[in-house]
Each structure stands twice: as structure tokens, then as C-alpha cells.
Image (cartoon, rainbow, N blue to C red; front, side):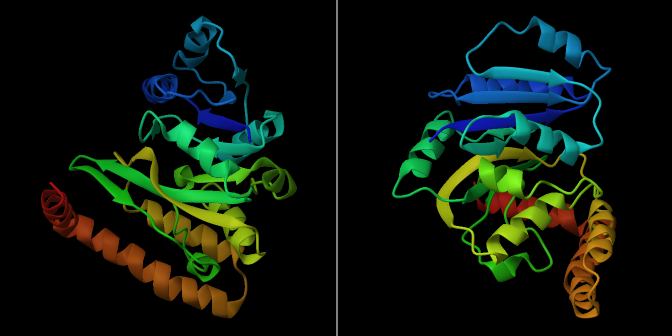
Amino acid sequence: MSLAIVTITRNDLAGLRRTLASVAAQTTAPDEHWIIDGASTDGTREFLATLPPRPGLRILSEPDAGIYDAMNKGVARAAADYVWFLNSGDSCASPDIVATLVAALRSPSPVDVLYGKVLRSNRHGLRSVGGPVRARDFRVQMPVCHQAIVYRRAVLLAHPYPTEFRLISDWIVTRRLFASGASTRYLDRDFAIYDLAGRSSLHRFAILREKLRHDRRPLDRLHIVLVAGTHATALWLAHRTGLYDFHKRRQHRART
């Protein structure tokens, strides 16, 4: 089974350098590594032009209609059997994760979705997040970090990411796959390091608005408001009062 890493970037040269270094340090290289740059203006294009040729490295730099449009471009241009999105600023969780993913995809039988855990990074340190999920867990949220999912390329070609949304299309596509009975397998490994630095608690309200725009049935919308809305509000209040940082400090101290 062949694996393509697709890295989406725009005006994040420092993050892109971290991602590229992480992939270069792998004990087993991916079959392809696509860099999809949205016509950056911060020196990214010039940096990409200086990269030495490497087997499987492919670069596309052109304007796009947003991150999901860029992700669809990466899927369309890759030739591998499976796609793993490791975007600018993300890093491989360990030097052998590509080898581990390829081995898992080969045995015992091919699947449509291989998923695992992610290491979330913030100023307090790293925390492993994830576990086995079921289709119903996707009703109002994305219970698996997108960087901890490897998709069969064929299913993403059949169900591309909707480009009319900015934040929730990974949830839409993955929820549809789990609900439709796609074959899935959980791998108890950290796939990637996902940097949460700078992520605002208000981000969850933007996600909530998009979910309400997508799910039109009254019962679904009510469930989203009650569950995701309550969670977003609680998180916002925790940030405003300082309880979020207090909890995270205790959480990370308990794991050290």
C-alpha cells in the first residue's frame, strides 16, 4: 500500500520548515509528499524553489479558494493508495510513524479509514488525545483529529471536501464515511503533533455557526446547539476566567 503525505500551506514558512524536517527525519519515506502552497507571499515559494530534488516530493504553488480547495487539489494530484494530511506546522509524532502507518495499512486487510491519536501541543506541553470512536460520535463534533486520520484516496475522490465551508468540511466528509459503513480501523499510536498555539476559544463559535448552516433539520440543529454550543460557551468562559490555563497546568503536571 502506498502512502502520500499532503501538506497544505500559505504564508507559514516557519511552520512549513518544521513539517518538512519532520518528514525528512522519518525512517521510511512516504511514497509521495505533496506541498500545496496557496501562492504564499512570505518567502515560502522562494524557499520551495531551493529544495533539492527528493524522490516523491512534489510542489504546487498557485492561488486557491481556501484550505479545503487546496486539500482537494492534493488528493487529485497524488497517485498513492492512501492520503495523510500533515499540514504546515504539524509534525510527525515519531520518526517511525510513516513505517508504522504503511505496515498497518497492509495488515490484516485494507481499510477506507485508518485513525489513531494526536499529540496536542500548547504552552503547557504535549498531551495525547484520541481513542476508538463510532459513527454516532460524529453527530455534532469531530471526535478524531484530522491529522490522526489516513484516508483511502479513492473515497476522498468520490467524496471531496466541500469548499463552501472554512472549518468543518473534514467533519462533514469523515462523518459521512463512518455513517455510510466505510471500513475503519483504530491504531493505538500518536500520528502527529498538532500545534494549538494561538487558537482562540472563539474559533469554536465559528465552527458552531458553520455546523448550523450545514445541518438544516430542526432536531439536528437543536442537538448541535445543546451539545456543541454548551461546550463552546464553557470553553470561552474558562478562557475568560483563567480556569482553562489552571486546568491545563494541572493536567500536564499530572502526566509528568
